[in-house]
Image 1 (cartoon, rainbow, N blue to C red):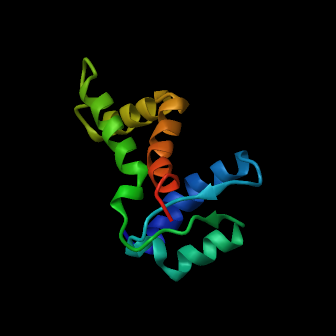
Image 2 (cartoon, rainbow, N blue to C red):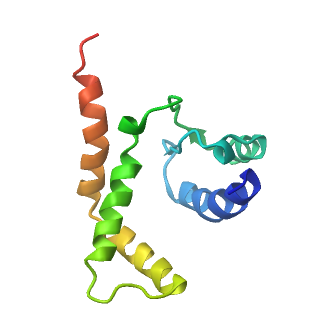
Amino acid sequence: MTGHIYRDVILEQHVRLFRGAMDAEFLFMDDNARPYRANIVYECLQSEDITRMDWPAYSPDLNPIEHAWDMLCRRIAARQLPPTCLPELRRALLDEWCNIPQDQIDNLILGVVRPVLHRPG
């Protein structure tokens, strides 16, 4: 993926629209992958007034999305009829993502935050 594709497909088609549906406290989280840090991505986020969460350079333990992907993969694998082509996979991923209860997502995030908050110092 390039910065251009990330901007055109992810940010402009999805994040920007989602941002419009959220309140003023919307905070966008991605990681430090090279395409996400391209100047065109930075400019797009700035022009859309989207605040990006600061992210340490290397922090797999602070990334709740990794656990969410795992949860999503398990939900797809548990389906009675697994997807057999790309359009079916896309639909299944969207369906399953929308069906993950918000409290499970909240628990993933709290699982990352809680150890940091309870760490001495």
